[in-house]
Structure formats: C-alpha cells, structure tokens
Amino acid sequence: MKKIAKQKRKESWEEAARKKLEEVYRVHGNMMMQVAMSVLHQQQDAEDAIQNSILSLSRHMDRIGSAEDYRTVSYVRTVVRNAAIDIYRKKGRRDFSYEELTEEPEDSFNLEKVVCDSDEVRHIVTIISQMEEEYREVLSLFYLNEMKPREIADVLNRPYNTVRSQISRGRKRLLKMI
Image 1: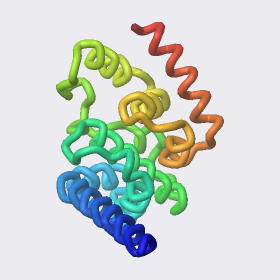
Image 2: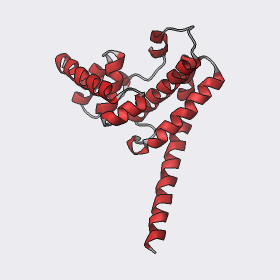
Image 3: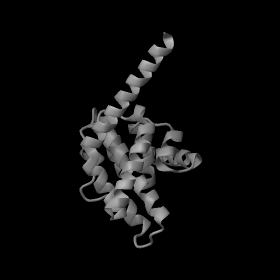
Image 4: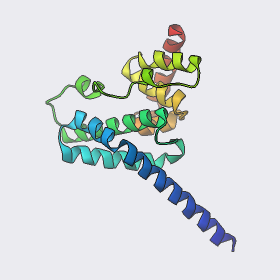
C-alpha cells in the first residue's frame, strides 16, 4: 500500500516537472532558438543545442521558478548558450572567434532592465551585469538562481574548482564595486 502511494507521488512530481519544462519552452522557445542560432548559425545544430539544453534543464527542475521569472530567463539563456558552444566545439568549426560566440546579441535579456524586489537587489544586479562574462555568469547563477557551485559546474560544463575560484574572485570584485 505504501509503495503504491510513493509511486503516485513520484508520478505526480514528474508530471509537474514535465509541465513546468513545457511551460518554460513554450514561453522562451523563440529566445532559446535565437541564442542557439547566434552561436551556431545553422538551424539543425541550433535545434540540437535546444534539445541538449532541455535535457540539462530537466536535471535541475528544482532550480527553475516560474517561466516569467528573470532568474529563469537568465538560467535558460545560459544553459542554451553553453549547449550551443559545446556543439560548436565538437564540430570543430573555426570560422568564428570565441569572443564572438560568447557576446550577447543586441536584443538579449538585460538584467538591468528587470524590475527587482528592492533597491539593494537592483543595485547588485546592475553591478553583476557590468562584470566580465566569466564572473557575470557564475555570480548570476550563484546569487540570483541560488545554485550550488557543483550545480553551476554541471550547467556551465566547467570544472568544479574553476567555478569555485570564479565565485571567489567574482565576489571580491563585486565587493570592491559595491
């Protein structure tokens, strides 16, 4: 009897996670394609990157809030961009520089434009958004998405110790800028 109840709870949790992931894709599907295309420039590869990012997102559903939340948008954008860069590296293309791949598109999500809950948070988000890319990504995931360094390492496909060092260095720079 307890086994059946446990199975039903697991199925209901999986159903809720699936619905949340579908909602995120429905709301942000176009943005996901835009980010992937800005890196890969081929629709088929961009679709592969989106599929890989959805798999990555599904492993961290507990970290995803509502589809409209700015943290979710930032997280989804980061996961898609990193999935696209992974595909780019695996294909071995050399017609674009790494800087071109990691720069944000003109119409990209801008943390400064997001309405935050308080002035302090708005100030910190503004400072983080002005930092270098490596620190901006890691600190956004660490502070805004409240992810652990190991989860960030998984999402960004970076070594755990690298992520810890980037958080530490980024935190020091953030404190100086504040």
